[in-house]
Length: 290
DNA sequence: AAAATGTCCAACCGCCTATGA
DNA sequence: GTCATAGGCGGTTGGACATTT
Image (cartoon, rainbow, N blue to C red; front, side, top):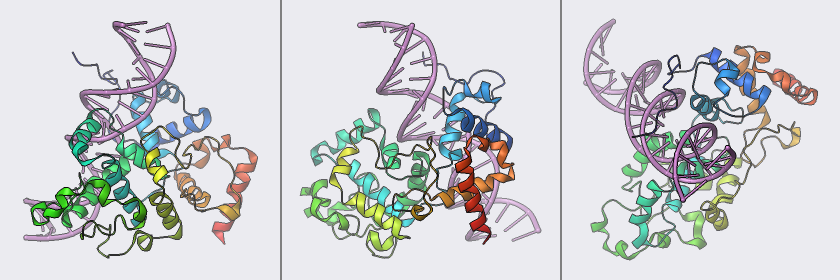
């Protein structure tokens, strides 16, 4: 007998979240922090299951989330990491690894998301399924194995391992060419760096693509390069905003929070910020108006 | 203008692991 | 060691929106 669903209680609401529910959840989390998710709905006055609250918060409401489509650099990074995560073993083991990774360690998306600050695993997974998969197929690349689809036309490839395809010494070129087939995220055969939509993206991509230790760390429980936690919100040094951490800048976050004023920003529990944080917010608001 | 089709993504689902009793 | 539970994960779905016919 299977496990009982966690939300089979009568009266538990499903479906899209309303602005009012969002407001309640944000207010509760900002005031009390993330605690026992099971208790959150009751304490926050929501008719949702805890799991639904956690998902809503994690995938949509967290202030440190970037909004909008993935940049080309981010997309390229996702492809690169996906290829490497699926190709960290000798070829003979690939099938086994693909299967076991699905069964035993289904953490690709979360691992990848951990390297993309402000992005969620759900977002990356969706983007992969809707955009990247199609791009790779269009270019004749198997999105699962990252190998050319029509191998019979390229018999010499059968002897090359995935590791060969991804030489350690030329990681910058990893996604530019795959046995002659360009698998860049764009139709333009540019390098990942050139694909970057911003210098910050370039730095992010380069630093990760060039760091084999980083890729190894994806297979161990190592903290991400950037701690995505926002629990300890620190007022930023204005000179350091939008730096090369890949984080959304404070200003971007401010924009998000500002957007929340549609609901009434104080209703979001922003009073939990101390005076210094509010001061920084006010400063940015002034700058926005200029 | 209306219907059909395609695309996107938020949310749900079921399974797994970690943890504590 | 066993069991119950919470949290976390990837897969999948369904509805809203966009595009095409």
